[in-house]
Amino acid sequence: MQPLPHSYLVAAAGSTSGNVSLTAADVPPLTSAPPSQFGGPGGQWSPESLLCAAIASCFILSFRAVARASGLPWVHLECEVEGVLARSAGVTRFTQIVIRPVLMVVESINTATCEKLLSKAEHGCLIANSLNCSRELQTEIVQAPAEAVAAG
Image (tube, rainbow, N blue to C red; front, side, top):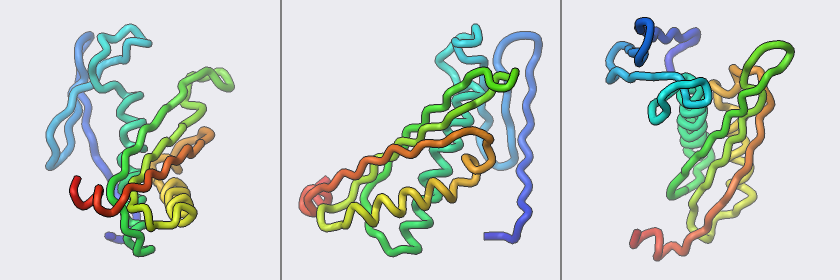
C-alpha cells in the first residue's frame, strides 16, 4: 500500500434530464440515474446503489486481506449490502447499513475463526467506516465437503 493520504478523483456530467456520466482515469465510464423511489427510471445504477456496491466491494477486498494475513483458506465470498435511507435530524440520509456476507469454506475450517475474520473485515472496511450510520453484520458460513469444492 502507498503511504496515506490517498486521493481519488471522479468527474460527473449531466444536463437537465437523463443520465449522469461518471468518469475517472483508467476505468470504464459509468452512467447513473435517480432510482425509481425518487421518480427515476430504475434499472440503472443510482448514487444510492453505487454507495451500497462500494461497501460490498470494499468488504470483500478487506476480507481478502484479513484472510490472507491470517492464513485462512476459503473458497468463495458473496456480499449483499442493504442501505436504509430515511429522514434523520431533518435530513434524508443513510441511517443503517446491513452487510450480509456468505462465506464458503471447506468443512474442516473452524467457523468461529471465520466469524472473527468476517467481523474484522467489517471493522476494516474504509468505505463503511466513512459513513455516519449504524451498521449490522449478518454472516453466514457455508461449509462444503472438500471433494465438492475441488469438483466445483
